[in-house]
Picture 1 (cartoon, one colour):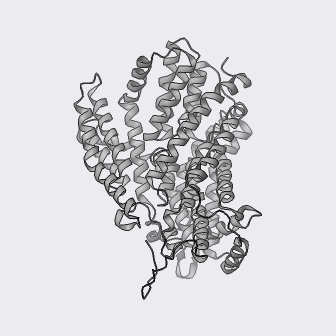
Picture 2: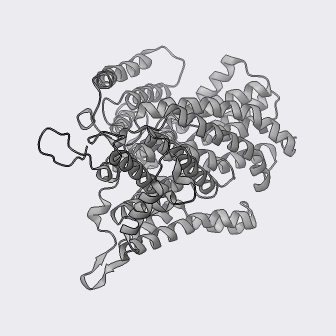
Length: 538
């Protein structure tokens, strides 16, 4: 924890901005300030994981299950990794790496095949977006954005309004920009806003001088709204998130019925709207902000904005790189709106403006745009870029690896077929409920893209075998694939906000479990109704 030195017996005063904007992520127990009860719980939780993770894996591997050898081995390893992720005896990224190593050592698949998915476009989206965020933090552009948002009429009066406004912005952007990119580009602004609120609490004596700003409930609510809001907004359009396109194409192939852009939005809008309402209510209840009214914030913000002065050369360069990246991220969505996502124009643009490549190109501009040409000083140095959160990149990379292995080994299909036989699925309601639950469970341990790619192909033959139109169950699985809220590895946006160091894994699990349940209920109740209203799946 970053604190300023102090003499005498008074507590040292926390340096709020350094604590929140200093790039810290996973922190060991020795780096946190905990109460005695919290420390006992954390020590117990993390100590338990040291013996429980290998025990769970060994017991599962020893069970006499009628399952292919590599599938049972993968399942046992994955169960152990999940225990490591939940109990944190080692940093979460290391838990994933242990699992990847075990997969190769125990012969599930060759190393080249296992590690291949780590070259996914999403990993490069992380790298590029994190470098852009680092420039925003270094040169103060994130702080400037934070004060600009807080100065909007009425927004800065309560913490609840700040959180809800941020969620609405996230939802709107993620409908057309990838969820990952949306959260990555908004994260620095969210941290800047949190720093302002924490500083206000400190200055007014609401918080102790040596408090830990990374443990504020208002920060948890803000960060989770950022992550979850992107997941919800991504459902609004077919191009909002990769699972939508995967599910839509598989449904069209199986049923011969293509869902248009407009039809998708009409079906998704009520689900997204109600889910966002639930997010706002539940997040603010589970993580009730320490401070509700922030009277006087207008004067505070005005004075701080005045101190910032005009945009510096470095800020302008960062803004140029950021804008170019966002425009290129948005362009495929705009083309889809104009010509349709099944047009040749969209295929040409989306094939070249891959989000990972765009992120890397945007980040590269930071090393080309000079701040002082005479001395060859550029907007960012590599030493600055090296400080990005490589742990989060490793974490999501391992999630992609496990998602690919679930599909390649056939374990996901085995789980689906076995569950269908076990529960005797024969009606559209039962198959849809199974599709939703299975998609959410799988998306908790792998990426949402992998979940859609695995679950939708399972659900379609299950429905056909039962004599049921697979349209609604397959579409329900597609939607539910984006509703993995509990773990950092569930979605890239979860991983990004976890990487901020503000959201403890236990808080993410508690809030995420609530939204998994709410999301499943909304899909089961509203999706069949909206499909019928629009006249799809006939």
